[in-house]
Image 1 (tube, rainbow, N blue to C red):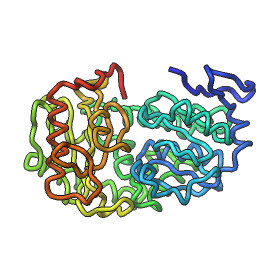
Image 2 (spheres, rainbow, N blue to C red; image 1 turned 180 degrees about the vertical axis):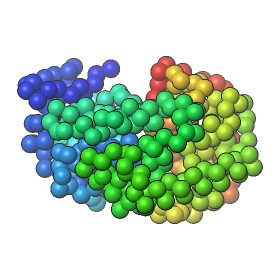
Image 3 (tube, rainbow, N blue to C red; image 1 turned 90 degrees about the vertical axis):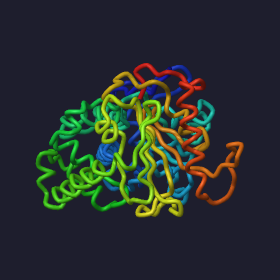
Length: 367
């Protein structure tokens, strides 16, 4: 697979296959980035911190894949926008990512680069790693170096169960990051850009209080997991819709341990809307049990995430989509969700899971 590999600043423009790779100094000088849009998780935050070194005066927005795919931010994205750790958008100026389902096709990339855009997609554990390696020759990123391994392992599903349940300050800081509170998330990014260590950042009163809230929320979720979750053929199906609670696969798979190979988590509300963070639409997230399957899982879960939602996707072992209205032939309809749609989506996913991924590739060392 061809990759966009970062090149030292003194290296001239080179070709890998048919794709051009621009040296970072030329990249910075050729782009007028005024807006950085990054995913609202810890990976996106650290990636944004790297890009902020390159364009310190740029506005920062933390977003969500669904906002990009739905066109919610179309009015903000143009050639002065750097997009990172999010689905590809043809109107941005710089695109940095590592998700397999987000990678632009060769045709998309050719059209994008022909109009002056720059793509740096690389197979890596995190988008932050792609950005870090790209800009490390130009800027002093030494303050970020101590956390890069944990960013990679958190986003790549490579932390142990003991680490997940530990008091590691980076893991707890990551749990507080959210696109629903732009000011708070930017404040963490600003501290990282200024060179503060995570150990010092978590001493901040606001941040430490948020960590306390997350501790309680995790306890609350664990208390209700058994009443909201069932396991079918080693797939844990956790329904948290309409509760206002959110979690990821780490918590569910840590709770059930060796009893499940993967989990399906339902979040949001039937009448929710994209952009309304307190009432997000009904969504499904799929996670391999990375504590049990360190090589990627039993099959490509993105097959489930893209079964009904053309904008679904992510990693092969961590991905998501929206719940879609389906008719009795499992064809997506253009209408509001009704009370039967969630169960129809879940049943179809369980059926595909039970078939052992007949339409999916069993990933080796997959993300």
